[in-house]
Length: 291
Image (cartoon, rainbow, N blue to C red; front, side):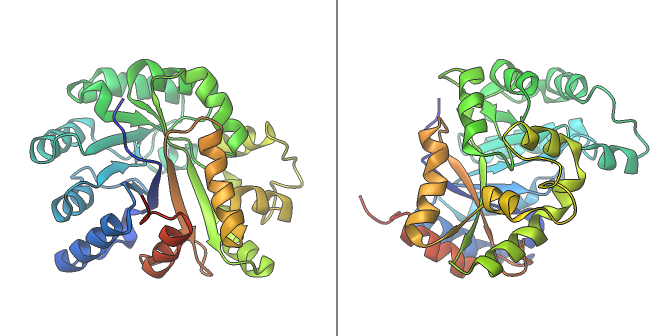
């Protein structure tokens, strides 16, 4: 298993600047701060240009997609892009893919049926050229987690608590990578943290793939309807003083994660631009510059 360090950043690929110089500046700072990986969310385009630009600007940073939605992707083009990146940056890129959600499939005129079978077909078909140890999948339920361990380098759970991380590790066993995403808000203003959380999380409350799993970890219908209860927001977003934020992140490591993909929320919810000031604060509280 490749050592990718303990702490990485997660952000939608669309909030990265389009200017090559600005991308390079931001990517180099991420690496300089001590984060060991960057995970691009929001289903990056099949050309993987955003990942390639970040890799080109850095020396050691690992980059992964978290994830490319199989309902919007062309497998052959995605495989070709992976091959190009692998040739340029061997050992530094993970291709993360996932079976998405019904609204995405339906928006493309496709029926959201047997998503795990479709994902397995993609891995066995167009993405068969991607080595097992260079691909990962979004995985929440037991069957998908088992598939992650069988066919890929590991799993990329999203919006799940540390209790899920512990169960995922039990299913995966000791070998495969386990990289959960964790949202954080840097500050101890409860109203601000919860508003940021609601703005970022409302989308997911309409997606049964998430709500079904969250119900397994103590959330009930009242928590998962409307804008979400305070109890749900506080479970999904780690906020508070530095010690509390770090403890919330490290809870995943203690539960069996190899690495945590940290998504920083701002007062706007999911930020519209790279939250570089917050990334600096996060690096400090994680003590990334210390030996």
